[in-house]
Image 1 (cartoon, rainbow, N blue to C red):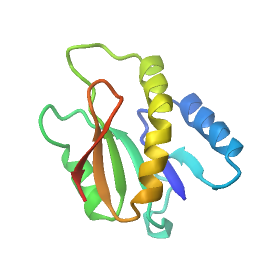
Image 2: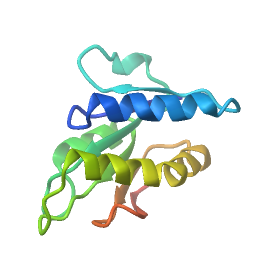
Image 3: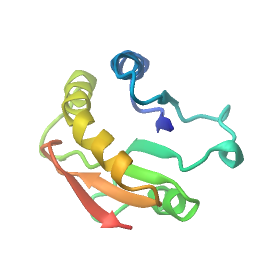
Length: 126
């Protein structure tokens, strides 16, 4: 399975998650940035973690990715608080077991959003 992160996520977070996944010998995941080097046509049932900054609802890009067959986890960050990359990274690592369970359970395109506390995944579209 290929798990992609948008450019807003730090490279060190992606490397840390790949190292964690390497410890799980039961499943093989490729964890990388989603950038222009990725050929969407070659991806099978891709997963994308992205930061969605739309105040209400979802950014059009998130919707387009879903329509193109992606399983999308959209992080919705509260504007009431200034989030550092460190805090976002810790929250994603804390959320990681829930995300992996979701990915194993659902093989069709979806959009899930992460609540403003970054501790729950909430279905938006399936």
